[in-house]
Length: 171
Image 1 (cartoon, rainbow, N blue to C red):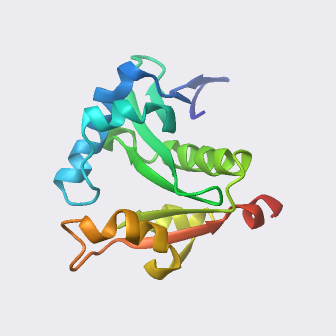
Image 2: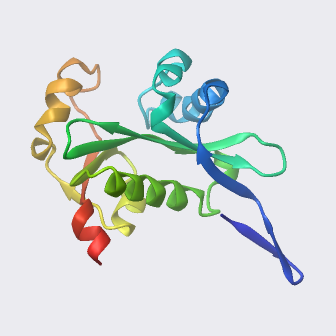
């Protein structure tokens, strides 16, 4: 949880929690500007609502507004993808993204996944947390399920970031 030190007592700015069905619209709202800028694929409120059990959110302690999201999408018993990873622009630089991503990796470990990956145009945060930039062909499950039908597949600029969850937990 991020804190702001005001005199001697820290004040919490946000908290991370499991998403709930009423959060679907707010999650879509956090993602929408990034999708509009071509940095993420859009996600509809309906799709998010159907998959809400896969999402965690960051919310403002003061207002309760959802200010960040991340979800874990299983591919098989050994592989999962991090999706819908976004932090609202006014909340970036406060450690929320790191907390969301670290929490998602920890959840993957607890659920027994061996590897987790993300498709991103902003690999820096993933690299800082130990993900490796790898050829997309190392996750053929993703290509079969999503890439073939994606309107952006020709000329795709996303990087494939992969983490061996077991190795990361040992370090």
